[in-house]
Figure 1: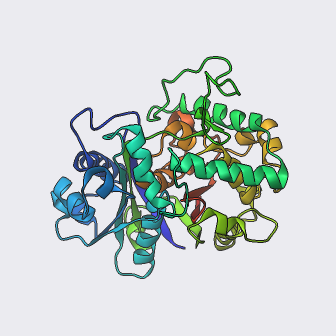
Figure 2: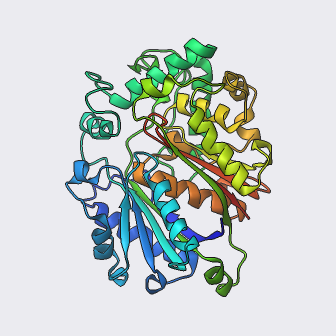
Figure 3: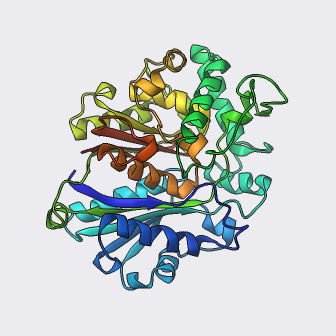
Length: 395
């Protein structure tokens, strides 16, 4: 793969745009010009645009987001655009589509913008809207919060196979919020937790669904992220030296969790492991030991633990020990707080991950910088590990 990341931007994930009287139009209008400036290009240079978004129709009644992008940035009028949906992996699939355009030689400069507005409705309604990415009528039927219920089932399946210590999930969450405190754009940067907030105290950390507690669960977030991707020829005209998307993996399995868990193999989700191996192979990376930074999908603590094992950072069933022994810092996992601490505006997450690792490998990540980072990986998951996209980015 020969696609370069020229620059990008994200909005402040702590903001509530509905309370400000703002919406998706304003999210586009803020993040895209900032990303263009960071990349050192103009809107007139952009030849194609791709938008990642899950559920704008449900949250805001708005479809046709490519046209809304032009309304926000009129200089993009006439630029072809496509909206992509793959649940929480929507942003990453938009990135892959842009990469395909550039590699095919159709265009030399692509804009990718991911966006989600979710705090304009109450928490219960938001949970119901997000549940549309599960198998409607088949999963989480009757659950108050569909995704916590489904990922509680993941935790139960993991426990049945390997044994699960809930203390390890609490340690994962504590790490995420600690790292978010360093990130000036993180949703939880100003949050403070009393002693015991990551344990089994039903008042400090109440159960939400099944065995998952409040701090195990990602929060509802408003936000957008954007990146500018370029062909080698365009990057060279700007002087070169940009981070490169060196390889990727992209696999999709059955929408139903039960059906995925029926798969045989060493790993709980063989297609997830396959996507990771695909990325390693395409990038010429030997494995997790070659990575300096990982932006890991942790919409729930159990998601992060499972993903760690499928990366190869720990053997199957040994992710808890890895966490307990300080492996998250040693492996450069989620230095900006991950989805739990930084925030998870669904359609923006995959784009934000790419933006962050590009900053890491160029040494421009500020307070969240991992010293000496040169090779990084993103792992973005949609649904109950249904859609998996992973990318390796090198300096």
